[in-house]
Length: 159
Length: 439
Image 1 (cartoon, each protein chain N blue to C red):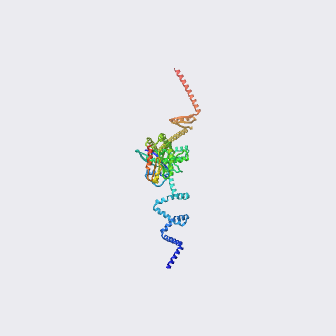
Image 2: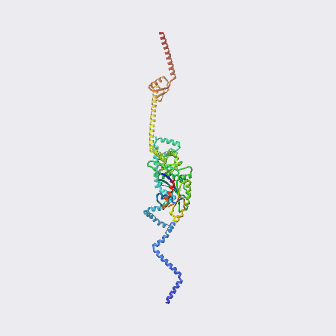
Image 3: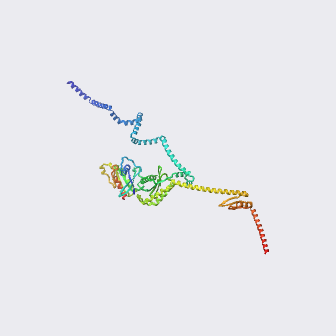
């Protein structure tokens, strides 16, 4: 079986762990529990009749005071960058994460998750930015979570 | 009629003169009525007081009013007891954060009091654990010390002299007897598990997750260390009785899962084995793409399994067996040595008895030694008689005469011999002349 390391990056409290929980356990909790260090989860995925495994490194949210150790980025085959759609600072913070990832893992695919889409009304949703490989997700309402991970897996394993 | 009109005029005048007063009177009457209703209704009073209750209570408590505190304290314990008998979970949630902060504050402010309170419980518990651990360690050390004929004992003594490490420390190190129950080879960059091997029934559940997590921990610690020191990396991670020994090289690192801290010898064995793997599979390691179905992974796993299984042959049990073998061998050697000493002593006494016999019979101080199976006699003789006596005593024995003969005796013997020769010569010539005459 082929296994790959995938990173889940973004600022604190954007819903990274909730996305993982929704994708793997199909559950959601309103309770916020901050991730300390790294939490690793695995998920098997079938693509073109082949079984692959993703080892997803859910890395604790970065803050201005605390950066992510560079060694965590090493050897990743892909990444999911998560922002909270209701917090502009988390969207602005994405570029820094993407830049570091691209520098340490050139030419590796990545996707962006604008999470907590359920917090916006229909009018606000129409005004959302359109970005390459971006998904408007909600772990709470299970919106586009499966699509987000599957899309990245296809880009990694079909490469 | 006039009375009526007068009255109405008076009323009108009153109304004109006391308009404000009347309005005020009406307001007061209305307020009085409201108050009357409120003071009669308990619910109304409660509603009014409740709005201000918290503020009043807080104010009273802030002023440390003894009466309020006394009243509250009477009921507080009852309230908690009642809650505890009802929904314990809810009460524990409610008190969780408070208790934690109260405890930390109490420890900070009244350290000694807290120690006094906790020591009788925790102290005893800790003492028992420590005593048990020390007992186990001492048993292990005693076993090693009592093993008086073990070659390891002397090996350890030499090692202590050479390395400068005390024998006790070496004994402590030996007492670890760590066993490797799992071995992982992990891709350094990605943290992906390349190959694993485990002792039978000691398989690690979800090894790929464990490998990634171990990798993350290692990365985290290394990252922290590199901020403080240069050229360092984590090598030993311990939790409870389990120990992870990490050795890193090139694009991979190896993790040995042990049940105790490995000693120098074990570390060295792991490192040698790992160096062999790195040398043999470096190209494969560098290009590893997460595919564990590769042939190299299978061969690698087999080699690792063989390494793990081989330690069973040198496991503490086998070590004991080996030690017993060595013990028997040493006993055998000791018996051999004793037998040799016995032979030597026996020989010494035989020679001593011979010396005494020679002294008794010749009066000469003769020393007897032995070379292989031949006796050698050393000493000085004063007469030829002694020599002949000795020759008689030694008859039938294989010996070399290294005795010093007296010069006069030899000279006398030579002159006697010369005389005898001369006499023989004369006899011979006489015989010859007789024979010639007869012819």
